[in-house]
Amino acid sequence: MGYSFSLADIEYLTSPQGAHALEEVAALELSTRTHLADLGRVRARFGDRAAVLVETVQLRRRAAGKLDDAGGWLFTDDALQQSTPTLVARRRAARLGDRPVHDVTCSIGAELAALTAASSVVLGSDLDPVRLAMARHNVPRAALVRADALHPCSRDTVVVADPARRAGGRRTHDPARLEPPLPALLDAWEGRDLVVKCAPGLDFSSLDWAGEIEVVSLDGAVREACLWSPGLAQPGVTRRASVLRTERGVDAWEDVTDADPDDIPERAPGRWIVDPDGAIVRAGLVRHFAARHGLWQLDPRIAYLTGDRVPEGMRGFRVLDRIKFSEKALRQELTRRDCGSVEILVRGVDVDPAVLRPRLKLRGSAPLAVVITRIGRAGVAFVCEPGAVAGA
Image (cartoon, rainbow, N blue to C red; front, side):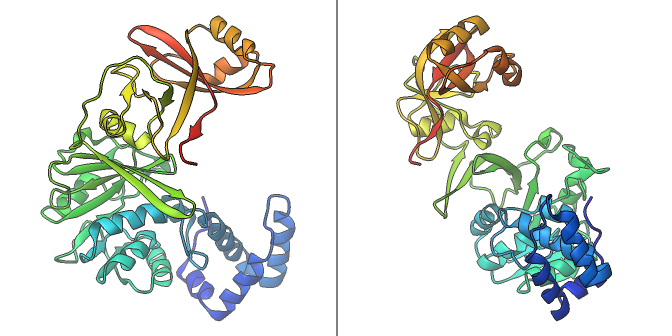
């Protein structure tokens, strides 16, 4: 639990005195090593304002790797954790274009910032007065109102929602336990063009969703699932994987959908093994991705792909040898290759890499990778060079 902000805190932090105090506190290291001493200095200088100043500076530092141009923003700890990374929000805003948008769970404004850059008409609303005050400071271009996401207060807008993913202080994968509950949210805005950001592990089986489910990853980590209502979905598309990444400071992305071809050959393993991005796997679009890039599967039921090249921006493992999997055979092969450290990837076989690694008793110097899986009913291990990203 982070510091509990009040409206009085927001008023102070946005005043000239508060801004000056934040500058002073931001000059401190505030590391684990210096925290007690730094906190003592802040208390001596600013009295009972110390906690809110230190919390704000630390939250701004945490936000730096997630949100662009947010160095002067205000956050709560929970709001920052759930805020949409800038690249993801920017991509969603670009897809919506210049349509009028209402973010009905705007929180501190991470989504609003991207929407206002793309659309000339943006409304934000939230029930929490503190987060709404923070959003007013963070995104002054947006029109803001205090309102319940389950009680519509706008017309002729695309509705964007991001229900809170915690119930009783713990993450939940039950749509009915989100805040507001997802079924109630969908009922409240029935008939409207709607975009709902959800956790990627959410169980959608209870929803009769007629639109598109998009799974989004950023720099290799799956970030969210997003529901697009039929009026916003691409015709013929019900599932999409959006693979976003930052390359040399430039936004890059690839979309794969279930409308793409999925015909791939059945062939022996190629020179490379490719572990598809998690968004592609979770969206069930492994074959579609493979068909696009001239790859094929090691086994029809396993998500590992293989081929004679690695798609740009993807991580691949160049195969050195293939052996029948057993701990003894793998240990002997790695010892023969003077292996001292190994990355272990597993799918389709009951093997825990954390348990297996020390049992291999590696004492060499060479780094290697091992992909353990099954082809048909046989367990196999591919000994590979360390993983490399194509084009990096």
